[in-house]
Amino acid sequence: MALVYGSAGSMKLLQPIDVLVASGLTYIATMPELFIRFVGPMEILDAIRLILPTLTRILPKLMPAAVGLSIVQVGALILHASRAEFVVLPINVALLVLALFVVWGRSRKAPIASR
Image 1 (spheres, rainbow, N blue to C red):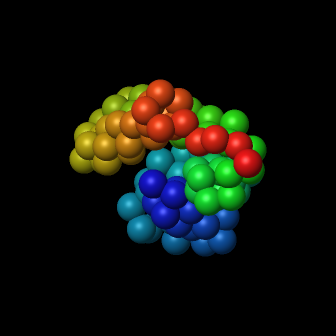
Image 2 (image 1 turned 120 degrees about the vertical axis):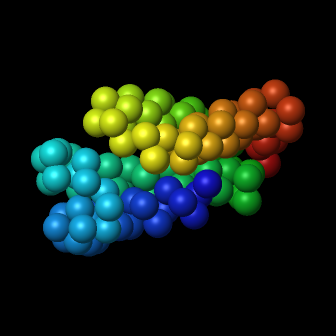
């Protein structure tokens, strides 16, 4: 999950808007560039927040990154469904399920203990 969000965020941060649209992210053409350039770093930060608490056992309360990514995926589902882009919906559902699994796992099944 962190790899998916890190790479998606990097693309949104670094690539020109027309390249993103040409690569199939057609919804980007309908949104302000400033919004896309904001979402990119936020996805990168969430990817980092998914990994670091587990690796370092420092600030395990940063786990809510998965909660935030769950909310992002609900928004993505609504956006793509409203644009009749049904081909990408299974990807959004899979990422939503993975994010919710991480939330469940880290909060109930195997919480991360602080140092």
